[in-house]
Amino acid sequence: MKLILFKRFTKLSLARAAFWLATGAGLLIMPELGFLLNGAFYALIGCLLVNAVLRAVFFVRGTNMERGRDSKAERICRYIGLAVTVLFAAAAVHLIIFREWLNEFTPAFWGGLLALEGILYFAIALCAATAPQKFILVILSAAVFLGAVFALGFIFGFGAGGVLGMATVLGIALLLAFLFEITAFFIRRSRMYK
Image 1 (cartoon, rainbow, N blue to C red):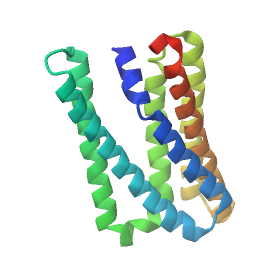
Image 2 (cartoon, rainbow, N blue to C red):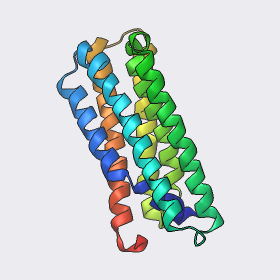
Image 3 (cartoon, rainbow, N blue to C red):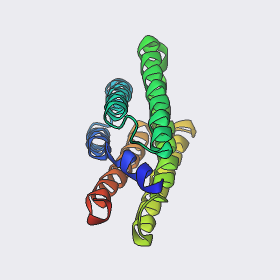
Image 4 (cartoon, helix red, strand yellow):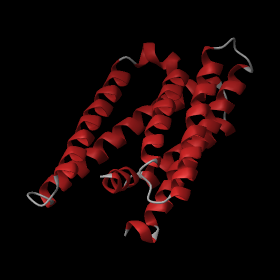
């Protein structure tokens, strides 16, 4: 079961890593309020939509290819993935419909998403094959979660550092998510998971 979860998660790791890198670098290079509220808001919607579409494709492809041959654990993982797909799509539609009101909360959405990603990363890190792999991934998942907590602290704090400080902390947290995703991708590509 652990191997199935790790493989299913890391199937999209390279795409997510590229997204985290582009968004994190964008925030560090352009820490202006306009990019933080507009560009990052639409990047978040794009992230949710792309994740939903890719997960739906994997669900349909997995259902057609493995009909009758999959184990109970694989079926459970597929249907959990379908539920996550529906949640991503619903969140994206909600953000699109109410963008005029929700645009101001973009940094909080990013911080919350990264906090959830940090928790998910910790669970996935425990599914790694060897103790050194688990150790590296647990450290990176804790770093992502703490980066998200610091970002939320800057957002809901007393404005310490202003927009520049908030964008910097959020950009660093996004780059830590990139490090986790790329590390998980290369661990999956190692001989142990072939």
